[in-house]
Amino acid sequence: MLSVMDSDSELLLRLRSGDERAFVSLVERYQEPMLRLAASFVPSRAVAEEVVQDTWLAVLRGLDSFEGRSSLKTWLFRILVNRARTTGSKEQRSVPVVDPEPAVDPSRFGGDGGWADPPEHWIEAAERRMEAGKLADRIRAWLGELPSRQREVVLLRDVEGMSSEEVCAVLALSEGNQRVLLHRGRSQLRQLFEDEFREVR
Amino acid sequence: MRLLHRHDLVCRQAVELVTDYLEGTLSARARRRFEAHLAACPHCTEYLAQMRETISLAGRLEPEDLTPQAREEFTDLYRRWRSEQQ
Image (spheres, each protein chain N blue to C red):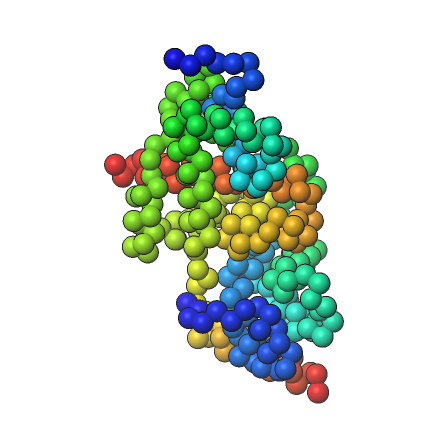
């Protein structure tokens, strides 16, 4: 775990002055998030690793020309996504974003549109298991099960904490499509939490 | 029981507005309507809390440590790049 989180801008300064530890810190911070994101565009883990490796080289080569108009993080992920897209898509990327799927299984509502099978409580149970360090791996696995476009948005917005503007820039999405994908992804994730904790009661 | 007005949201609609609500993209009028529904509906209030919790839990995932081998590889990568520069 990163004990002292240097800010990205500080790392950038150190990188530009030729500090190799700054580079390793940056890799430490973004290698795994980048691998996860790359995996959603390419057919295998091995290819994703290549894409990420290429991205790091491109980042080093581009350091001098990076103007800081976007955050370092947005810049990194943009390079990654561009490379991952050109390396090969495992699915039709041009499929338009449509949202036929409801956030909640329609059978859980009655004829009047109200809850017939209301959400079960799980927040406290999830918090306890997270505190005990036993939930993070499950969440990672669930993220991996989301449809790739939803996963990309949820990873960047909720796991990486990027703004919607940044995510739109990285993934070349409109605000509206970004929101639809975010909504679907988060809704499914919520359902997975509910399912998980329903079983342990 | 409270009478359902024509402009009232039902739960099935309310759950579809949660992300727009959290993103702050609802119109003032739609937001008031959504909040009025929440005030009268404990299940949708719970649902909204769960969506917030979902976001919060996802945001607490930490990057895993690099293996010593990976550290070494990236240090090498950096050094190779530096030597190309000179």
